Length: 457
Image (cartoon, rainbow, N blue to C red; front, side, top):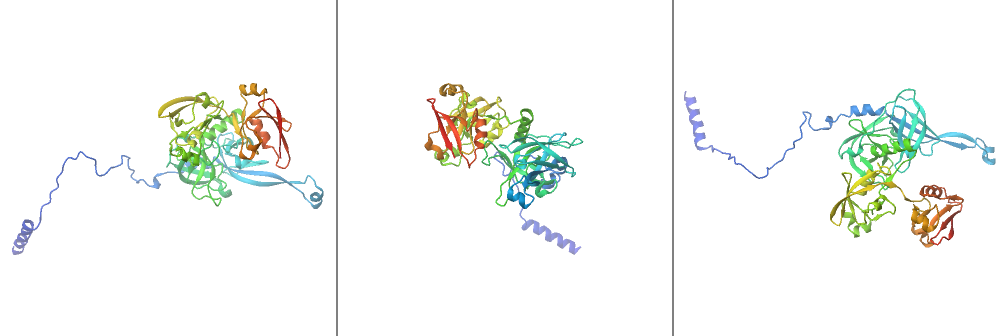
């Protein structure tokens, strides 16, 4: 009893004299909260990597990705006498390259990279079940680095359907499937690092990903977690030739359009706007403040183009195309590359502070830069034909520094050697065939109707 009474007195004294009561005052605060929370539903697993399931996409993809072997036939002398006196020699197959491909139809159509099958005398395709077939080239497009080949299999093949690459988002998980280092179908994972990446190629943009891609992956599939084909793996940026963190893929919308054109027309139908835009890292862009513009600055409008017909002007800034925001030139060219001549697009432009919407009909390319000499030439319109009194030829509209002293600009090229030049496609083919070791006679006509000859050697 004494112990209980002593304890009670001690506890009561402490509570009364030593412990101070603390109060929390709750008030209604109309200001901003001190912290914010996400409305995203939280999984019981937590937001970690193990939430992402790659198995379904991998199972859909591996059997639709094939190994492509490029074989060239090398004629070599089989003995000393053939080497010394010359002979047809023996033909020896030589493997000149390997890569990957993606089956896009059950009857054996395969999309791959143009650089994988270029200069091939024969193509061999090996499926994931190790069966091999001979393949034929249906068509190629070096500009987009896409090629279409076909095999004849005895049964329906597993294939991938094209997805919509315009709907891909930066940060989205993707898988790269291919045959690096001659291995069978290999799956690597990463995310979309950037879209509409410009690698310095004309009118081309790429998806950038950090999924590991190495030599042999070219032509393989880039798929999302649903197994939809959103890109064709094409290139890496590396000082060693192997993967160091960045890889690039042709967007599926561009690849699909190229494949459809090859199958329907036999070649790629390319519609262009007909504008030029300076690179943002040039001194000209910096001096004129163009490098700070978000959008595509129109520096020039090509003659006889859809842009000229729509009355686009130098100084206009393109902000959107068909409800797709345009931040740089690659955004615009990447979208236009999915269109054909005759298609129409709606541009939202800024002209001296005013917001305008302009509909532009895309037209076929009317000008290009020819190989070897680097001249820029364009097809003749009716006014040109009347002015120069000719029914065919291409007009020189740009001359590189090397040939500025020859007074070539404004003249019409009529023929190269004995071959007539009817349009820019003829010009590209004939200039590309010019030998560096011979001489070529280029026949031109000036505004006075006088013919001139230039010997290119």
